[in-house]
Length: 162
Image 1: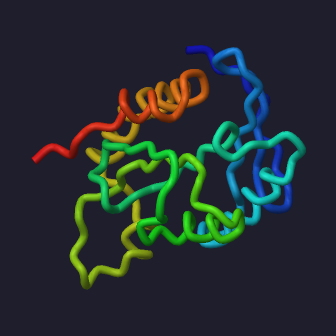
Image 2 (image 1 turned 90 degrees about the horizontal axis):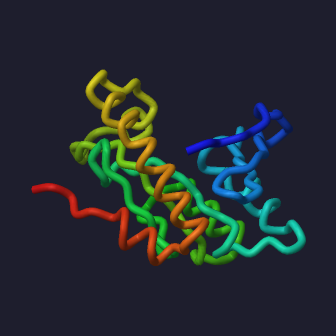
Image 3 (image 1 turned 60 degrees about the vertical axis):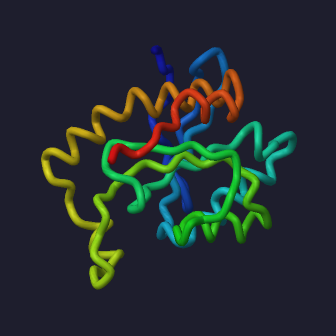
């Protein structure tokens, strides 16, 4: 797969890279705000003339409820307690946008501080599992862009192994 992007340009709220992939013009936006405040960046994108949430937006987030190396793509839905998704939903006034959840589990103990957990370094095996997931995640995003969210969900969502 060939991705042709300019280097990221850093603004006040986000770093943005534009380019072409899969025969489409694409903008990759990395909020520079705290994760809990990333919705403002997304809202500004949604205000671009011609922008359609279901067609033009996929939000990629970490998910402690999924084991490392797994991912889920959804067309809409609740935040599942994810503060970043809560903020995006609040800023957009809807939960109807595609999200790709990337597992950063394993399950944590209830007395563990979630903020500490998600900010710690990955162990080598976890980093390897995430690196192996990147091509699959890119394929899922390509499928979403070219064939739609339903096809991407059917093709890339897998059950969590027992």
